[in-house]
Image (cartoon, rainbow, N blue to C red; front, top):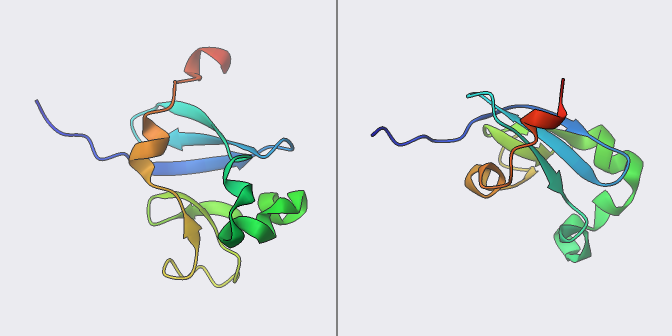
Length: 94
């Protein structure tokens, strides 16, 4: 059996601090970011417009590019394995 390394290819931020995350193998999950917003490093994302405007894919995972320069070393990103373990929502998307 081959080991799969999850690669995020697209993200869609939603108005409720959730993000739909699309993987290269076709799996889609919805990440609820409300719990991480309590941490100091995520404080800028409490503004919903900043949350949505800076949400992107960097380092092959969900990230927020707060500096705006697409530098993967300066973004806030999440472990793609943690995201991949979320329940698939493929059946909800036509």
